[in-house]
Image (cartoon, rainbow, N blue to C red; front, side, top):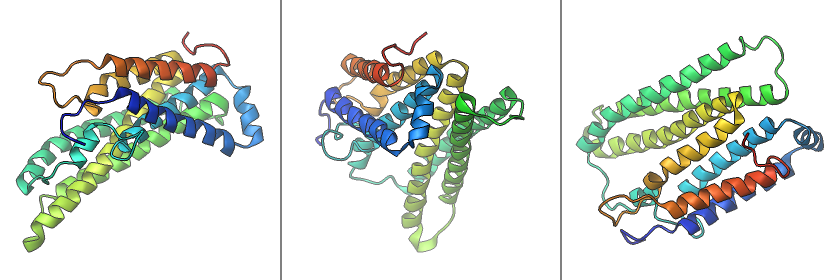
Length: 261
């Protein structure tokens, strides 16, 4: 893809929608009949949580697949980095690593806070958790714990880039930088998801707004208009994202009721 080509929001939303529908249909096919019946008779909050989880996952799957073929291929931050001809040199990697360690520490602290707040809110969960409480509790806990693990490993990989590897210095510094970068991305995605799901336990409506706010605020970062001197809001992308959220949410979550309120 040529540098500075205009992002095609419709192409991104098409890829986004394709991933989301695959996830929704796949979930429907994989669930046992008993679990399907339980979901249909569960609260609106439970169905909202499941939809928020799948919608959020679909965003990141479509983002990471943006280096592939249409309808996923579009100018994205990931595509721009993947197409960069030159790898950063050792000093650049180490300088970046110092700032990355601070960011990772912040997200690790956020994930630990979510775990702590989750247990406090459930009073250490003395009774068996079922239904909405059980589903949301274990989803938040799993995301937060995995985020902590990935971010700790990523931080360790960053520290490893400061070691001396002799004549293979450049090769191994590049290698451990890439190891750190992948785990940092995944840890970041899970840390934010744990916060969104935790908020959704308190209020599913606020959880819906949080997902939309997060994806819209980051849209120009993840899908930049690189040819422009000054970033301009991509209102068409925002609008299509909101329409997709409301349309699919209307069908999947509430059997005819928009899940706000």
